[in-house]
Image 1 (cartoon, rainbow, N blue to C red):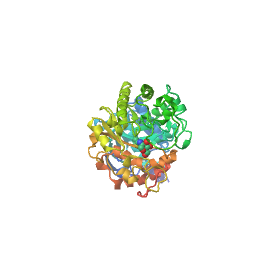
Image 2 (tube, helix red, strand yellow; image 1 turned 90 degrees about the vertical axis):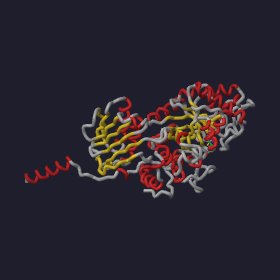
Image 3 (cartoon, rainbow, N blue to C red; image 1 turned 45 degrees about the vertical axis):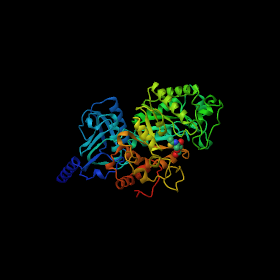
Length: 506
Ligand code: TNX
């Protein structure tokens, strides 16, 4: 009997000390965006009851990331504790001592049977490494949690990877915007452009011009209630985004798309009469009065208050579809707005029409419709942000049966949104001219978060990959398999995505 127990004990000691090797292939773990390089080691790491997280040289940033990782693990039923110093026992090591080659956003994740080592040069890189780890882990608690061993070395091809949300046509509450921010973070996107004012609504409190929100914020497309962000609510969204390494770029569209402002203040109209509030979906009928001095006082005040709320370098001034502003008024207007931005220490971003003005080399032109405008901007030494509507617009319908959205640019199926490259789509627009890619969601027909998710997912995952992954590593046949694998994860997150027939969903 004693001998038998000893045997059992020995057997247990052996198996407890050396858990059975479970082979797993890291290249079979679906990641979106696809990393720069993935080297499988063929085994797996098993999470213990408690996983220590080691912070190599603790700092405020590293502490925050350690806690963030701890929360992510907690959601999977994995307990962890945070320690300082080098890894002593199987766990996860976070370090900001990564090699210079990783750049500002790159990371290196090495997974062995003994533990996970995540390195970066900057905090953003660690954050993106944690996003990859989240995708390698199961999306819900399981009995035993394993990840495949191997090495991932990763960094993005473009510094600007973003999406736009039009909160003017239909208002989205801060809580909804935060959900959207979380989606962007998961996909390693780093910019959120908020379209804060248009004909149908003015959505950001401007203390020096209070009627903008009082009157201009009071409705939306279809005549609903509208709404607006107080400066405090807006600052809170900016901070929430920043914690996820996302910069919010605010847009106040001008001189066109300004009916909400023109309805709020009669003096901004050339005839001195307030225009009526507008709840339709026509574009191109409104303009600020470009030869009144009060217009520039207004722009200065708005930019001043917005600049104070904006940690990022850019403020977007729209400039699109100013069909009732003659070009001889439009050009000096944009020139003057560029000066106002400079006075408030911000750089200008605008839709591609602003290339007609005397834009300087710090200005970014967002190419949405006319490649010739992008080329004009390049000639003037400005940089280009790629959002060609035919590929990047999230409000375009998937096909002729899609209930939501518009289709003036194209029907954009999942393959069409993925199979293109901003640096080769149009002659004369090359990688060196581009800061990156942005996928805009206009909301004339989008009224709530469920509808938003349906138009955004899965196309935005392709846009995120285009911004992050080199063209040579992007293959549709491989992407559609990875995307299919993601379906249960998206469902578990409660994302109402469009289940395109192009994908063999898991
Ligand atoms: C064009 S894109 C617009 C927006 C509309 C959008 C609808 C751009 C710069 N202007 O005002 O919402 O089409 O797809």
